[in-house]
Length: 125
Image 1 (tube, one colour):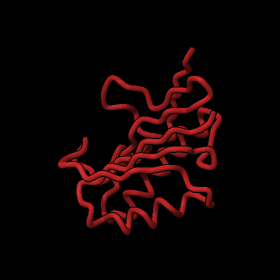
Image 2 (spheres, rainbow, N blue to C red):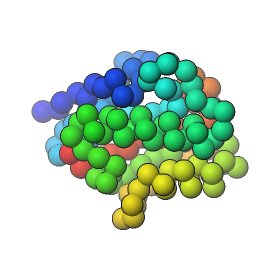
Image 3 (tube, one colour):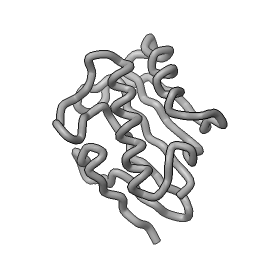
Image 4 (cartoon, rainbow, N blue to C red):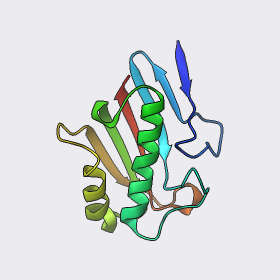
């Protein structure tokens, strides 16, 4: 059985997918971008601010699903430019208190809405 997560603390999906799905004791959060859920604007003035918005969106979905960033076990970061890796890594890391989740980071040629970074996570429910 699965439970769909819907929250106003993250942007609405732009396609046929859910913000998050809880199944088998895990929360699967779809890739989030730096779109402000309140204004609908993309936050991309700096890669740090864009990453912060992404992580706040992830956090909002996790909390709505009854989980938290402390329960994240796996993340995937997609970047359009690996030259941004250090700045993204520093901002991303500030959202965790240690015992970091497993992760991979990959460079891609393009992301939805022409953003620079997208992050998906899997967490314990």
